[in-house]
Image (cartoon, rainbow, N blue to C red; front, side, top):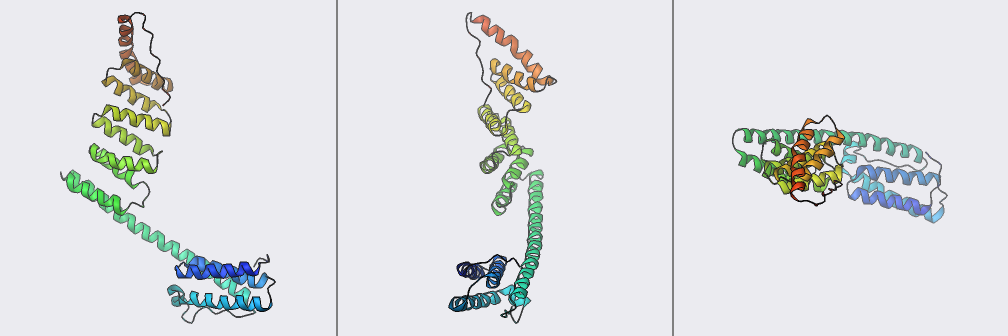
Length: 287
């Protein structure tokens, strides 16, 4: 037991905390606060009426502890504190704290595993519904999954990616947007959202999604190439060339980037030739 002295105020505060935690059924904090108070009884220089008052508060805290369901189960006669044996009682409280903490963690992990098993079963069921040609029921199930398992990290992104894989782009978008609201550096959510807009032929939204991905994840060969292809649909040759060139600069072996540059180059040249004196537009690729 550490010999660091505690004041009477410190001890009273520990006892008050223990009682408050006991009311909330917080076993570990109750035990830790009580143990700290017992340590204070040994190491402090508290005497007389003040010590008597602290002892009375401690007795009340111990009654609160012994009323707790798990303590009653483990110690039917209650945990008993004896004056002069504070060190032994402190060690009892700390051992109990360690054992309960270990047991509660095991129980938490077991509950989590069981819950994740239920989640997996429902995700499989939703996929089977889609494969069976019943996307409406699958969508309803995904909605319920998202609501019930909203505390599971990445659940919105996971559902969005699954819907994207099945080609249900419109249905996937809200999940992916929610995922990015929660975690704006979610690579899978960014890529899936871009793919959804591409699949829906929403070029403007796809470009905005790419710019957003670049903002949070940084520019990349893949994102520049996808942007170049989107500009190709609009026949915006200058942007096609610049984005393809940016992809090429990151990977000179990218055959698609080279092909797009070669495709765009004569168009840019012919456009400039058709407008003598027109200055070539400079494109800023720093999104």
